[in-house]
Amino acid sequence: MTTPRPHDEMDDVMTNVPGEPDVLPEDEVYVFPMSYAQQRIWFLDQFQPGSPFYNIPTAMRLTGRLDVDALRRAVNEIVRRHEALRTTFRSIRGEPCQIILPRLTLDLPVVSLEGLPVEEREVAALRLARDEARKPFDLARGPLLRFNLLRLAEDDHVALVTMHHIVSDGWSVSVFVRELSILYAAFSRGLPSPLPELPIQYADFAEWQREWLQGEVLERQYAYWEKQLQGPVPIVELPGDRPRPPVQTANGATLHTKLPRSLIDRLHALSRQEGATLFMTLLAGFKVLLHRYTGLSDLPVGTPIANRTRAELEPLIGIFINTLVLRTRFEDQGGDITFRELLRRVRQVALQAYEHQDLPFEQVVEQVNPARSLAYGSICSGVGLRVACGTSVHNCR
Image (cartoon, rainbow, N blue to C red; front, side):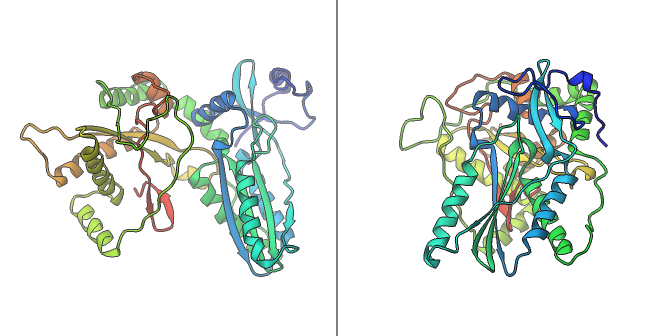
């Protein structure tokens, strides 16, 4: 478990931050180096302080009689269990660090919409949810979790949960929702928490990561990515209906589509025949589409990966996610290749990338040092793929 550092090592936790008080709280705090993923998000926040781009909002519809006190207890029990949710981020003597509070109690503001006409409540709830999702966080002050409750009727509520990406990721949201459901069910019946204590905390992972990812281990990781990304990494120029801006923006949209069950069954069958996952098969199809639109025979595609390679990391809330560059070449001495051959290549590249997923993406970029452009992403040229399997969005590994 995490252990506190003496106060004399923390004299300038506050004094190095403009506008912050120059005294520490009396409570003992815990100081640890940031993980590489936290450090990446922290640096981005230094360029755009308070940007909402890294907020992770979740809305949950709660129907039936609601015990607000039990819900409040459940949320604060999750905060107690997971140190990441009690963490803020500052620079100490020039080094970015995570500062963990020994305790933190969140309030659960309740906003009643019952005074509105019934037909207007949904619209108002959606507006408030959007406003909440865009509300900035202060990484130095925290807390980096907000929980708000909208009451549409006595038996109809919407819970708005917003976490900053520096303490959370998509997997963490699932952990939060699962624990909230279990704890609320227990507390609303007057029972104690049925959840076992966590054997480690996120800060333990951050320290282990920095100790482990060096020397021979680091060299092996670097060697793989240097080989995989050697030579000019092509820019994927998709035909567009307007010029690309000189500096990329956060503007975008999401297109949802459903594939017929019969097609999904055939894709599963093909995947089994080739020893591939559904994600690998869909990625191969995506690369064929990119190939036809761009004419490129060398296609790098970026994809997120959970990066929880050890069982003890699975129940933790924290940022573990990493980005992998999956680069596939279509060239073949005999001419065109079949889709099955392409799928085999995609499978091989994906499996090798999974074996070398521990090297943070920003270190891959630094080591490979590709040509930079503010109009495009670092290596992946702004092209990525996420696949929905069932009700969740992930890599379908």
